[in-house]
Amino acid sequence: MTLANQVLQECESTNDIAKRLAEAGCPHGTWVSTRIQTLGRGRLGRKWQSIEGNLFLSIVVQITQPQTMSWIPLTTGYAVCRFLRKTFPTLEVQVKWPNDIYLQNAKLGGILCEGSNGYIVIGLGLNCVDSPEGIDQSTTSLTHSIGGKIISADDIRDGIRLEILSTIEMLQNNGLSNIRHAYEDLSVFQVGEAVEWGDGQNGIIKGLGSSGELEVILSDGTIRKLFAEDVKLRRYSLSSL
Ligand code: BTN
Image 1 (cartoon, helix red, strand yellow):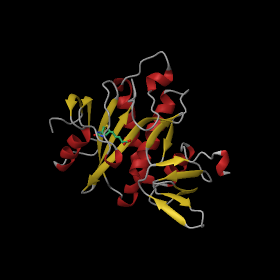
Image 2 (tube, rainbow, N blue to C red):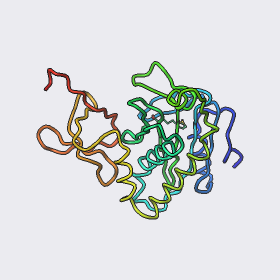
Image 3 (spheres, rainbow, N blue to C red):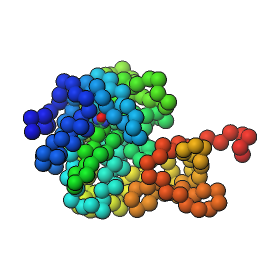
């Protein structure tokens, strides 16, 4: 377990290391972080650009309550938002379904959960010192948002890790009712809002289903369950009203 519970200088992907640790039987809560990540992965097969100074952290979580497993990604997103709001009270950090971390309509961080055999590896990338450019969405960083003070991964790594673990413990011990409401309070998407996804499909948000999926109402009244799509708020143009 030589790479467990430490900040490495460089690696390809902390999620890969954490998965190897999990397969070797490491305990719940084992983590690995790195200063430079050369092959960081994002959701939906994307690359995660890893700028030095930002946070790259993976945590191994043992699943004790399989029925709550599908809520681990959403719970992690909520925990990260909660920690950041407590630490930086001026920042209205939100979670964008399923588990992007958002600030003023720009992406501040993302979460990639991977796992099998009773464990999940939670991979968190958070823009602390800077945010990548040249990607198809707006991005921001903590340092940019706070203005004037450099916030680096070292300032928040331990706090975020402990908040994620305690929130997951709450989910596994108490069930999802509290987490669901807390998540909905910090969500970019609110019930009744128009959203679009995929190739121009659209609908109105109904809420979260029992597995954490996003339920939307289509124009013919049927309900569509979205599990992993990229969803965005639909901005009506005058011609579409
Ligand atoms: C997303 O697409 O929004 C999720 C990004 C997750 C990136 C993190 S960085 C630490 C961990 N290691 C990886 O290779 N990916 C995750």
